[in-house]
Image 1 (cartoon, rainbow, N blue to C red):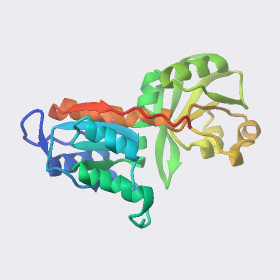
Image 2 (image 1 turned 45 degrees about the vertical axis):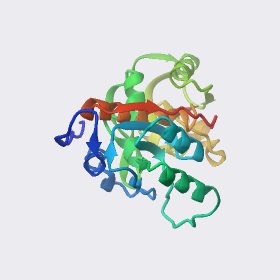
Image 3 (image 1 turned 30 degrees about the horizontal axis):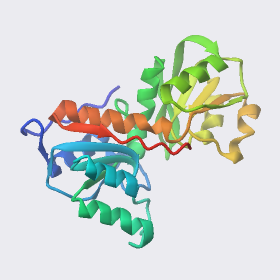
Length: 265
């Protein structure tokens, strides 16, 4: 079931007060519902009025400068600047913060909440793009599912499925064919989901679609009898920030731009 959308504040289309928009985002994404080490929500405060939005998977000097150059007042990211421990404002971290402050740019991060969101989340968007049926929660994170599982409309060969994913993400997939030669029952877990292979097997899934491989889980695919298609950490996490930015255009009339800065990982 899709979470209800909070009512949009009464604002002029094409602009919205930062604090009202942040409150709407926090409620829509339910940022307080996840025990996520990332600091979800507004990480850097900038201009008080938002008219234009940029979206990026990662926060870097490059993405911050690109957002500022695009005229954005708000940069929405999946991977923010803060991950549960204090960092000194030195080196690249200082330069990232300085770049945002000099541009008066707001930075909003949504990590696990944007993987998990049933409407605009990375996994929900991929499930929709792959026409997954009988969709159900999958992929435990700190006691809450953040991925999705279901059935493809028809079984297809593992190679055909990998080719389809490649067309969807633009990333050449790494395939570990540990299971059946066909794909029908699929689990999706964006980013670093290799640790869910055992969970996929227990759920009766024949294939797991995730982002990046981990050496410690290499043998799991073959020993649990599950195919794993690795489509790239970055490329499996472009979907959420794009869908969220598009939703802001729908709700508030805010212009937006996606900053595509692939890492190849």
